[in-house]
Every structure is written in C-alpha cells, then in structure tokens.
Amino acid sequence: MNFTPMNFVSNLYYMGLGMLGIFVVMGIIILVTMLLDRLTSKKGGSKDNE
Image 1 (cartoon, rainbow, N blue to C red):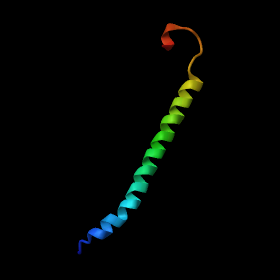
Image 2 (cartoon, rainbow, N blue to C red):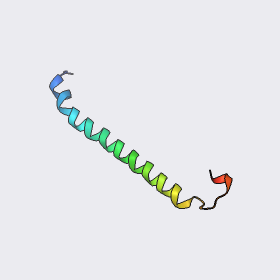
Image 3 (cartoon, rainbow, N blue to C red):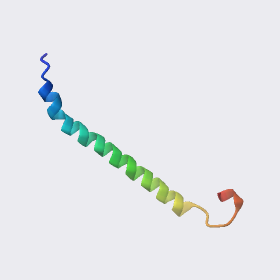
Image 4 (cartoon, rainbow, N blue to C red):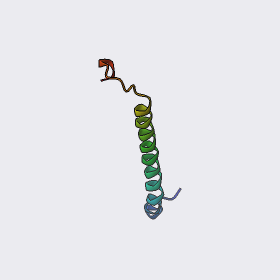
C-alpha cells in the first residue's frame, strides 16, 4: 500500500462537495420543519401557544 499525499489533496474537492451536500440537506430539513410548524400552529391568542 502506497501513500501518495497528492491523491489526498486531489480528493479534498470531492470531500468538500460531500460536506456541502450534507449542509444543504440539513438546511432544507430545518426550513421544512419551520414551515410545517408555522402552518400547523394555532392562530388563537391562548397562553398555551406561547
């Protein structure tokens, strides 16, 4: 097994794309959760909804 540091450096691009994809999916999940919370929350003025 040979260790070639240049292969690691060239794969940093793909690792960065994978991490970016993870953050994008996490952001979408957070936004959908916030949207569903706003759509399903009660609009009344009761104290329980605060």
